[in-house]
Each structure stands twice: as C-alpha cells, then as structure tokens.
Image (cartoon, rainbow, N blue to C red; front, side):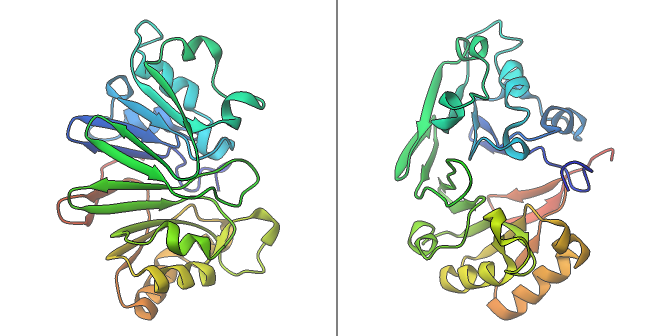
Length: 252
C-alpha cells in the first residue's frame, strides 16, 4: 500500500485553537500537505507527534521538523516521540534536535499539553517497536487514535470514553499475516462493540482490506455495531464541532 501509494501515507493534521500538530508524518507528508487545497503549511506547525519509528509513520519526520523550524533557522516547535526513536537507530537528525523548543518522550500513561491541546498515551501497544496510541481531549469530546498494535483486552480500558475512535485496521481476517502485529476486522469489531464511540474511522488498510472495498467493510461494521463506522479516504476532514466528515480537495 505505502510503496505503491495506493493510499496516501502522509499522516494526520490536527488544528485546534491556534495549535497545529502533525501526527505520524510518513512518506509523502510534505508533498501532501503543500499540494492540499488550500495548502497546509508545515512552517506553521506547533509540534510533531510520532506513534512509533516505523517508516510508514515516521519517514518524513526530519523534513517536517526542518520545515517547522523554518529551514533549521529558528528554534521553534515541539517533538513528541517514543524513546527508541531517539536512542536505537535514531530517526531524528541531531542538528534538527537543536532547533526544537522541546523534545518530549512518550510513555505509557503519559499526559501532555501543547498550548490548549491536551493528549495522553494510555497504553504501550504490542508492536515490533515502542508504540503508543493517543487520546486527545477536546471540549467537544475525546478523539482517540488506536495505532498499530496486536489485539489485547487492555485496549478496552485504555480507550474507554472515546467519542471518536480512529482505528488502524490492516488485516481483513485474523489469519492474514498474524505476525504483522496489526488489528484485523473481527478484532476491531470486538473493540468497537465494547467501547461504543459515537463515530469510528477505519484507516491504515492492508491489501486484503483494499481488495474487499474498505467502504463495504465499514458499512458491515456499521450494521453490526449500531453506530457510524467510516472507511478513511485521502483528504478526509473531521470537523470537531459536529463530528462530521468531509472531503478536503486534492489535485490527485
């Protein structure tokens, strides 16, 4: 999916009360941001968040940080990431670290603030490297990102109280490459039935889900769970005021 760019892998852009952060700037993050309509300018970012160090989530972290620090000419912006992204085969270049206002190490049970933006990393996920999901606390409700992980019942308590649940759903069936340590659709169904958010958004699809048509997978989960489940698409925008989604224009 990533190598063929069948779906964009540039990550998530979060804008709240003048604070803007880029979550998981994977391959194409800079190009996708600048080619969006209207453009998203990385030079205005307040921070960058990494769930983990794998390339499909962190490949463009250096160029996004360089843009945030305006070509490494200013000290500005904050970086939030797991410790192993800095210490074991570090993925953030040293000269860029010197131009950041702050580097913050993510930990299980951690809580963080960046201006009015407040978020937590409730659980260390079961994945090949140190990985965390996120809970963002907005006045309108809690929006959680269940990033890459093997299924565990600890997810229930970690993401309890989520109004919107964004779930990385790689595998169509449990038998599809279980060694990848990613959620399958049946496991996501168990998670959704237990947590019952107001809205769920599936993303991070593998080829088996793409072939099965993600929107049809989401429609079946909507029928089973009794609340809206949406399959993410390139350019999807979630409006915090209404918890509704719309399409952001793209030249692609």
